[in-house]
Length: 104
Image (cartoon, rainbow, N blue to C red; front, side, top):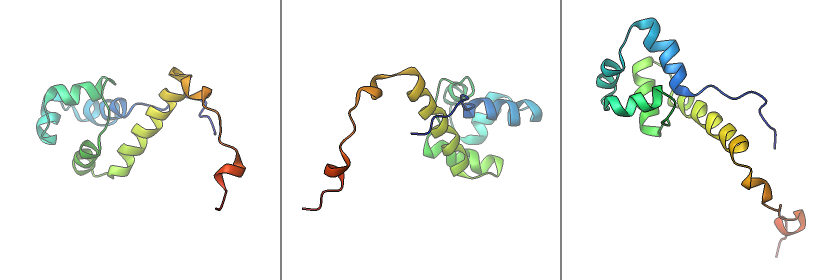
């Protein structure tokens, strides 16, 4: 598995720094635009919440981006967190190639 060296940016930080701050949009106003609660958006902006497929669709429509952009940002962030915060996954023993490719 190829390991990312640097922690990817949380999508909430991108929303905050690339959209809300430069455009002078409040979390409350952006939440209203997206049709979600202020609390829901605030969790994402403060890097405590995740981008769901539904939120990705809403963000892509509001910011003229793609849902894939937001889901990829979230996936990269979450995978890096899983690799670096919890090491329990490293105890999993790989299945031998002979078993994986057994045709029978």
